[in-house]
Every structure is written in C-alpha cells, then in structure tokens.
Length: 364
Image 1 (cartoon, helix red, strand yellow):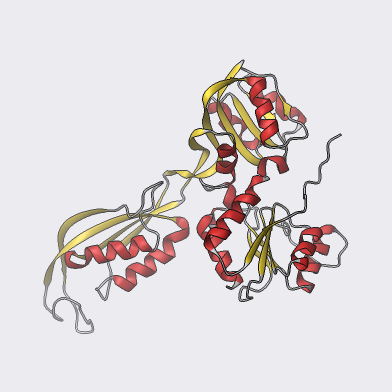
Image 2 (cartoon, helix red, strand yellow; image 1 turned 120 degrees about the vertical axis):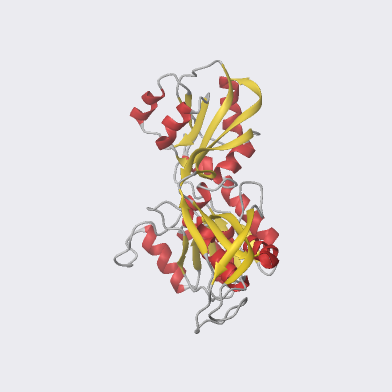
C-alpha cells in the first residue's frame, strides 16, 4: 500500500475540500508513492510521536492537528515544529493530517463527541451553504440507466443517508450533425429526433470532477449536452458543531459530572446553568466559541467545547450553560476513531494508537 492510497481513503472519509481556508490538512511531509510500513495515529504530531513511529518501524504519522499550520520559511530546528519536521524527513516518516475537514463532516469529530455522550437526533449546528452542484445531462433513453449507475458509482446523488438519488424526465432531442461529425445516432447533414431522458443529480463539491469524468466516459454521444449549476442550498450534513438530545433530561450538575468522567477532564470551566434540568446539548470539538450564537439560536441547554476566553463566558447571558472541557479533552477520541476506520479498511500494515499523551496542559 502506498501513502497516496491512505490519503485517498482519508479524502473519502472527510473530503479535504471541506477544510477551512486557514487549514492545512493532507499529506504535509513525505512521498505519496512510498510503501506504508505502519501507521501511528495521534491527536498532535510531536517529536515523541515521530520517535514512537521510528521505534515501531512505522513510516506514517496520522494526526488530527497539522504540525505545519503556518508557512515555514526555514527548517533549522529552533522550535518543536521545525524539530518534528526535520526528524520526520531524516527518518523517512510521512506526516498526514485530517483537521477541519474531519470537523466539518457529519460522521466526524463532533459525531464522536455526541456518541460518547449518548446523544440522539444529531444535526449539524452550523451547516454550510454552497457545497454542492446540480448536474443535468441529456441522454438517449436507451442509455439512461447505464449513465445513472456510472454517475452514482462516481459519487453523484448522495444526499444524507441516501445514495443513487436522481430525477429523470422524458423528452425529445433534436440535432443535425454537420459533415465533420461522427454521430452515434443519425447521419451527417440530416435532422434527427431522438427520444431522450433528462437525468438530474446533486453532486457534493468534492465529487464533481469524478462524476463528470464518469458521465463523459459512459455517455454515447460525441457531443454531450449538460448543465452544471452551483447550488446555494444549505448542506445539512456539512458544517461546524453538532446538536443532539439526551434520552432523558438530567440535572445540570449531574450532567457536568457525567461529561467530566467521560472525557477525563482535569477541570471543567462552566457558566451558571440556565436551567436546572438539561436535555438539549450542542458540542464542538476543539475551539468552539465562534459557535456560541448558533448554539443560543438552536435553543440548547448546554454548549460543550474548549478554549473559551474569559470575556466570552459573559456572552452566554443565561441563555445556556457553557461547558469548556478543554481542547485536547474534547477531541481525544478522534484518534481512536481513526484507528478503527483504518483497521477496517487496511490489513497490509499495522495501525497503532499512540502511547504518547500529547496534551500540553496539566491540572493541579
């Protein structure tokens, strides 16, 4: 197995096109064609994690947080980022990150948090818009099924928990090939009328090129009539944060104690409970204060995330209870989930969860 095949699989799990503009997910250091000897998975990429990979003869370190986040103008080993990158290069270790792309997909970081808490009725807290296209293509009725199947196989028609979604309408296509044409139907210089089907599918942004390639490879016509239209619709399966409900309401402080046990928190910083009983919960892995207004609009009782600043706690204004459980604590189970996904997909190399605690914060 080559590194590029691992990266392709990760792109399938959480398409890199959905990472935020400031992010730097993907293959950061290494050779896409390198044969994989083993993978170590961690939340953060540190020198000690690279050492662990070397110890176990693994040549890939997969992390949630990218070690190269801002541009490096030189690599001289003056800080932990440069030292980690240097060590990886010197020992042939490939560094891969899946960061905000994994935050922004439905079955990603926030789903993992919600699942740990037993939340039901999960929905993206702040869904993104303009992440999809509609493709309408005209095809002879005799070839419509073949075309639909090929496009679906390439990723068209995936809407939430459904796949192979399409809409078709019948009509007549008219054309006249000129003397330079090599028509599939009809003769040069003669008008032609063909029973055709208009097939319409929705395509997520990351799958557009693959679907167009499949359409062109399968369509029988020499010249294909099709429309590709950018949609401004909100995509309820792509975005930041997640909401869900507890099966039964809990006393607010009892719920906080459950959260502390579940995520092994050294401490939870929280605001005064807005309600004595809580049931509707919002979560965001990592730094989620930017979603506070969304959580308030969603009418949740508790918003669980990390990295709230002092003055941001005032913004709760008794609409909800903020529970800052810590950045590492909120995302720690992401590594376990990635290990499980890789083990299900790949059997030709060992996948290890790091033994290194990469949390830089200690509690007294």
